[in-house]
Image (tube, rainbow, N blue to C red; front, side, top):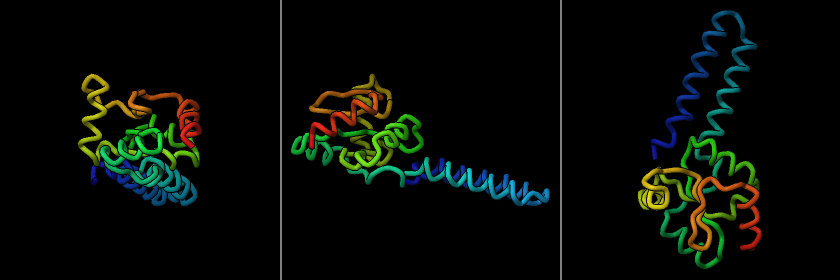
Length: 145
C-alpha cells in the first residue's frame, strides 16, 4: 500500500523544496505557482484519482456476473492515468485492480504479458488486451450496461 504513495509524496517534497527556494529568493508568486503545480502532479499520480480497487478474484467474479471489463493498473502509470481520464465518469463502471496492492492481480498481468507487469491490461470476456484504446474500452463498458 505504501508503494503507491511514493510518487505523490516525492512530488510534494520536491515541489515544497523548490517553492521554499523561490520564496527565499523573494519570489513568493513563483513559489505559489510551483507548489500548486507539484500538488496537482501529486494528486494526479495518487491512487485517489482511480475508482476504489478490489482484488483480482472479486473483480473476475463480478465481471462474470455483469460482463464489465476488469482493468489492471498501478499508481504512477501514465498510460493508466490516460485511460482513466479518457473514460471519464464511465471509469467507475469497470472493475479496477491495483497490481501493487494485489499479488494475484500482478500474477494475472504477468501471465498474459510474458512475465512483464505491463498496465493497463484490460480483460473482457476472458480475453486480455494490453494498453487498449480508451474509446474501445468505453465501447465495452457501454455494451455491458
